[in-house]
Length: 125
Image (tube, rainbow, N blue to C red; front, side):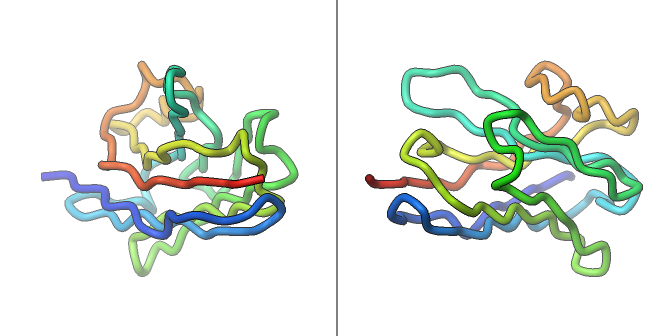
């Protein structure tokens, strides 16, 4: 059974940083593509970043240059380092994994195979 458990969310002032973690069980992150999505209140869930199983990252324009996606294959954990946070980054952040064909690389919610429960990030101005 695949489980993705996020942690590291919280409240921070604009310009601050947070680091999210996603611990995976029943799933090998070294062999699969994964990503981070987010959903702001009243908005649709959107893809922010993806990490190819070879280690290559991809970012949406909204987070490019500020967020860094990475992983630790030994710990089987995905990370998201968020810097220069803005109030518009306030959202529930979800870890996402695909079913083996790297569909999550598309950053489309329809292509995600597994979701975590989410962790809340709130950025105040």
